[in-house]
Image (tube, rainbow, N blue to C red; front, side):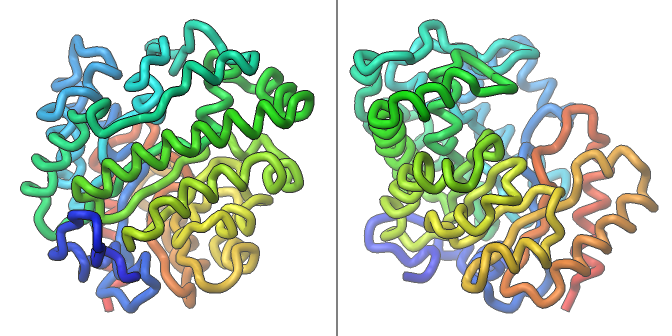
Length: 355
């Protein structure tokens, strides 16, 4: 099924011929499309101004604020796609999990998941739980017109890791202990999270998302055999559940160079690549039939225009001949990034790749 031609969703058809969606479909493009993970966020002074005094999760539940923050980088940078402003723990908060996003720390779960009894805390997500998402999408699609809007969700493994660890971790010792020590509980936890994540993406697609990205931020902590056995089935379930809508599905993780083929196998149309693997090598690992997204090192943006353009040329050279390429960073925009450097980068990619 072609992107944005859906029997069930309400995707705006005017985005169908955008450079971004053409690249997702591996079709010829007028220029390499560009967007940035975390483009709507702390690097923008206008973002800091509108968020002042408002807690992160509260900001994700205010449609007017979500719309404004999502639109800010489109206005400023001339990127080829917007990404819905949210956080990966929003659907968990929406179903009643006691968690908060602590400044300088990240998501913190009041009572970490450790036993089978904890599964009862994960009820189904309904559209009514996230009505503010549908409202925000209505505001955004009306404003964006022909600019695609990317839906957003965290993958089951990363969500499970937050729930089991109780917050960010460098070792994932509790999550991996459950995965190795009680594989049945682990599988049931990820399966339940897959249903919640798929429901969250479905709400976004039916509200007007032109594409969706599944973020598996922590998947790089896994060996390929563990990923295939203990994680891939849940991610595949999410991506398969939304496949009937015909919107491109992007799958991204950090430090996942050894998992790129498996992440594509999970059902992605586009595989996101961090900066550790050149795109030509990533294409070999992923195999044919997938577009790639990436993969400039975010720290390069601190090095000055000449260095940024030189490294950008390296990325574009590695992407030459790919079936489809969406230019992005290899991870999110860092908070202290000069916003003007991003604007210049978009212009440079558009100019250098104009066809």
